[in-house]
Image (tube, rainbow, N blue to C red):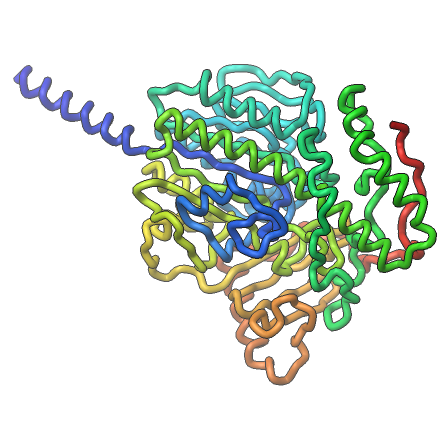
Length: 524
């Protein structure tokens, strides 16, 4: 009898160990405000991103990854919970995330994982469900960031740092991988960057990169917003009118140490002086073009530093023999406008901000060089990580696991439409509240506080310049999409918008030719 018990126990232990060995490590790489236009794996990009491209080349690229609510904090809350904003309670920046609720890191811990998050958190509350966290305080600066350090078994402590934030986040992630992770357990690391969030401050290594190049302008840089509902013209996020001297680097950041300030001034002072000497004689178009070049180059410089950091982490996984059993997923909290429609920022259900990059590699599961046109979402990330880990996916999560797509399968009853909802008005950039549905071919948007609608034929009008909502030829499609919108709102338990503020139509104040305050450049 004792022999049988011993054999049974050995078999049980062996089964447990084999299951543990099959659980992949998970590395989730996340950027803030990164877009497909600045990721060369997507083709016609404004720069090359060789290290991010490694994920696509060795794995799969998704062409239609839509976000549920295109803004930083809400996107992160959706990823933690696998639920739309109205259910997880974090609908707009400035909310505080309820960390006591169910999240995928907590479930992974219960299934044997060691969990860590390093970098941008931006959910206001202290991270829960992580054995280790070292996160930026609030939005976090590009240089010399204060960070909150702690974990399950340690109290949170704020610590100051000196250096470029992208590099600091990378070093902390590598330090944890090398020195602090439990090598007897599978791990899940959220490696999350501030960059390239506004106001796009490049690191010392790339301050002068692209100085001698001219970045191509998007075809819609000088959009006049005709042909759409009123919100498109009534925002406050144009390159023409709404960029600050700080955005344009006409003043230096206020938190640089003397060494950093010297390098900064060496990079910007002469260029600023040249611009300020001629701005009064420039046409309005020339001023916009100058602002565009300054903005987009600084944005790309920030992305370049993150791409370098991603390369170092991928190299470490290779060197330590971890790559073969590690699922690596890359994404951003939403897309971004690199001058399309004359804009910077995000928020809209228009394509550039609705779509976010999504890349994934998992040797032995994902075939290299794959591509998926399925409609997927940040709503699916939590479910995907749990499924990959062999953990049960809670029934109240609202997304779907992407693991079948990773395996090359065609999941039955996969979504053919997608629901979006943006809440932050009144708020930054005065983008009206709206919700809508897209099929990837047609898109219906309702600005519900104003009761204005838009309908776009994305195949005929990919830049979304002309709403066909009132076009008689689209009456049937309009009716079809309204029914689908109602169905999705019921499916996702949206109900009435309890977050509605008093209706106030935004106004776009004119500032004159350049929309810019004249500022003397800092002394070199």
